[in-house]
Image 1 (tube, rainbow, N blue to C red):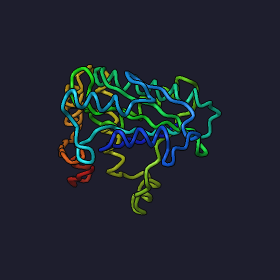
Image 2 (cartoon, rainbow, N blue to C red; image 1 turned 180 degrees about the vertical axis):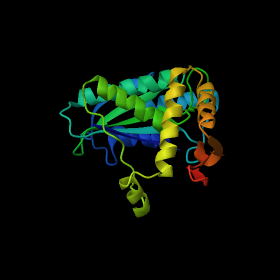
Image 3 (cartoon, one colour; image 1 turned 135 degrees about the vertical axis):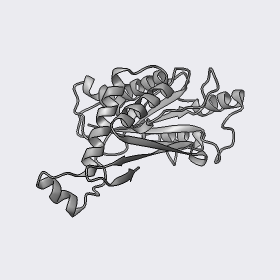
Image 4 (cartoon, one colour; image 1 turned 90 degrees about the vertical axis):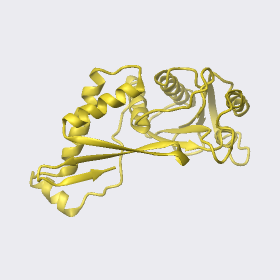
Length: 249
């Protein structure tokens, strides 16, 4: 079973040092490591060299210098090497989806009940200088991770979100009645499945195709870019079965 968490970092050096050495230089914390297009024992310096070469993401604490991915495994008898291999494969798949040329490191931790990977991606491409950008990043990475896990014959679990179901919605479901959240989720999944049938290597084309497929199902997409977090937020707007217009983030 595997969980994934994705977050931006404004200090790639601090993220790498913490993942590799721990807060107090705990050498027993990191039980396996690997690097994609870089040396994991020297990655903080190699990441910085690339950013300086392209004059991007230089201001630590202000610019997004890295993307962090936590890949945690539960309830499986796995060795540190196996867990690190799955993290490295995930990093390879992400790099390929981004067009190649990105640096990433994978540090496997064994200091908690469950083995887990800390994957750190440089936000600047070593070859082109372009910034790391992935639409629907968390969803895409979770899907990649699940595929890697299932290919190895391991269990894939549903991602658990905080239960915000109201008593009214629960009763409607129990009685087999209409719930707008279920309707929107169904439309979202249908649009995504249709997009996968015509997926291309161009991320912008895929996003536009997905938005078009949603629109055909009566769902409009609003985008809002937040420069401070280097993140685009999406709001889905549709009219439910009862004629009520609903916005959902």
